[in-house]
Amino acid sequence: MTESNLPAPEPVADLSKSPLPTAKTLRGRQNLLGQFLRFIAFDLRIMRMVAKGHH
Amino acid sequence: MAEVVILGAGVSGHTAALHLRRMLGRNHTITVVSPNSQWNWIPSNIWVGVGEMSKKDVVFPLAPVYQRKGIQFRQAKAVAIRPAGDTHDGRGAVDIEYTSKEKSGQADQLRYDYLINATGPKLRFEATEGMGPDGHTVSVCTADHAMEAAEKLREVIAVLKSGKPQTLVVGMGHGTCTCEGAAFEYVFNVDHELREAGVRDLARVVYLTNEAALGDFGVDGMVFDQQGFQTTSELWTGSLFRERGVEVILGAHVQKVEARLIHYETLDGATYTLDFDFAMLIPPFGGVPLKAYAPDGSDITSELFAPSGFMKVDADYTAKPYAEWRAEDWPTTYAAPGYDNLWAVGIAFAPPHQISKPLKTPNGTMIAPSPPRTGMPSGVMGKTVAKTIADRIRHGADAPAHTASMARMGAACVASAGTGLTKGSAAAMTMLPVVPDYQRFATGRDEKETRGELGLHGHWVKLMLHYLFLYKAKALPGWQMIPE
Image 1 (tube, rainbow over the protein chains, first blue to last red):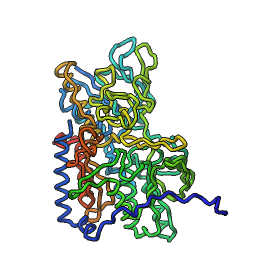
Image 2: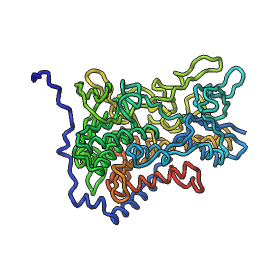
Image 3: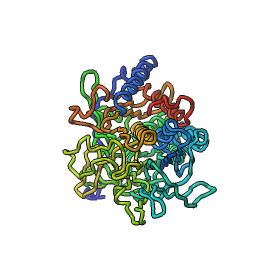
Image 4: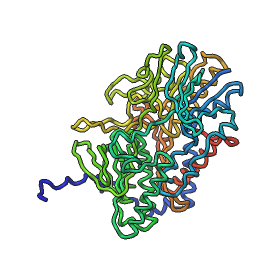
């Protein structure tokens, strides 16, 4: 295969600028107590949004 | 006595039927027409598609619920609407064709005083050659499709366990697809399953999307306030793709699919091929094909429906450039122009335009995510129209219509990134409003209510919504307390 008829390289997006989570962030995302509090907070936010925006 | 007919028993149609039954006395008739005998909680199909749930976990039969609630049920598909009746009767009518085993193919006609079109989407696999369960890719759009996807995924995992590398592609099967969130969820659930099976290192996982930027989700992306700084859904989702090692191909229109080979075009007009061993591609949606007739039998389909097959409602359909799009273009009452007893809700209504900026390749190919109209907004529309109908039946035809614009209402989108009560995770997002309003908000949305979080709690939220909405849809005691 010559260079001219090689298939074009796939246009895979460059994600090297996307921030990687730190080990602490990853641990936090799985921490049961912290996540339980986030669960409550997110549910309250949904309810507030329902009250605010469903009209 | 009034007769209300609802076409479709998905989120918006079923919600409308239950609320109408709750608000109206039994002397009024509510009839639901749906070609499917079962209700499906579609957001959980992605878990069926990776084998973490079975079909019975996400569907239940509609007939017993409707029988208990005093709602008439016809397992049939609507084929035509006669909004002003015919020469025999001036009341509106719907022509239906039964789909149940016992009456399959039989035609019937239902008269109505009020009609809600909540027919949902037609899955247009045929828009891309070789795509879909009859072609070379799988889907998670229905519970049956998802079961097939899970089986194919199991086969690929078995091959990976034998030591042979495999390429798995998940994404959008056409440049004008919607429901990017479903593909987003599925790709991370596939990634999660591969990790659980201990074969992730041998798998190449590719997310192939029509979104011009990650995190677009067909809603033009989001700007979040995170710890005092503005961040975008693009950066936030990019982080997750990078962390999980999922490759991303953006702005893609799939042209055709052959066995193990996807042909696609990107926004710069270049064309590429992508080899695959497993591919789940979402098809574009169209309106469920319905004809419309005037009393004299003349065809008025183009008056009632947009070319896409979606029903025209009280939106501003004037063609205008992206810079001139406004929140006010979006419908508020969902009434069909010229008729005060006909509405279209959920996916069935024709949006005035996309939400994301539509783009074209140099070859003229449209790559423009269609606006999502599912889930929370869909249920709200169904309830809103039910309230309008109930008011008009109880207080007279002059009762004002209730309103619920997607440019005013919010939505929660919880995108699973893997299951497990202690190992699961999800991207939990809220946005207010769904359609950005740059006249009201600098970022298009209320920054206090537009948030994105990743973590185990997101999985718990998604699981909670699964059980809550199945409970609500079964109309079990207190169902009406659960918001749409």
